[in-house]
Length: 294
Image 1 (tube, rainbow, N blue to C red):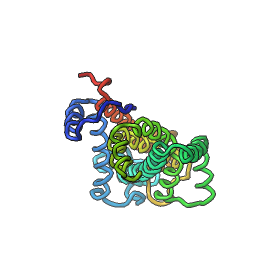
Image 2: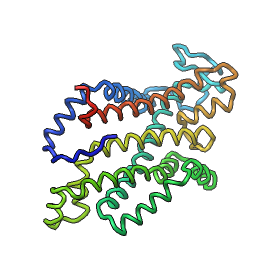
Image 3: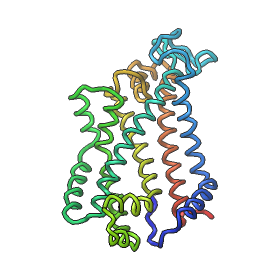
């Protein structure tokens, strides 16, 4: 991931123009964003265009892909294409909510610990280390099974509350390198309060780093949610790509030769997370001059 440059900051306009110039020339970034936008469009608009609900029994069971059923039907006669577009929407929602919450907590803790230092840093760093060493998936399993609350929102909440420590530590380290810069000292001597210094002086100079952090948290949330869904601890209502895989496994789709039941959701999860990684690598090359080809 990009390391913050210690040179004097350029004007916002010149930085923006330079970033856009190299962004449109970066193949990895364009491919990654292209895949994400296509899948996101299917997840947003697909449910508005398909007929029926994801759990409706719409045809004969175990039908292969055809012009009528684009991805075939499962053993219950449910249209897998309808489930896929609804599952994409749910998967993106969990990723945005879980990754967004983790990013907010990580940024708040990282900025405050890195800027204030001293006792505040020690307390927040101790809290971060405690959460960091906890086995996230095991904690989510216990909480989810104990509370018995199965919804997309609660799942995203659990993921967000347990996924932020590494982001907080990374942001804390970058904040340490920025808090002694001249423009921060000038704002501090001018009487600007700490929240404004962080939001107006430090955060803008880390915008690319923060954006890439959110991308990684977004992808991580999707993987954790899919893991929970696959082992049967996903939402009890609706459908997601992980739940589709869980149902396909539970009802022996592989043994029955129903490849169209488990391949689409597996490919969808792989495509989303893989595209996010490729886009993140592309962004790293855009914002880090040392990694650019030209």
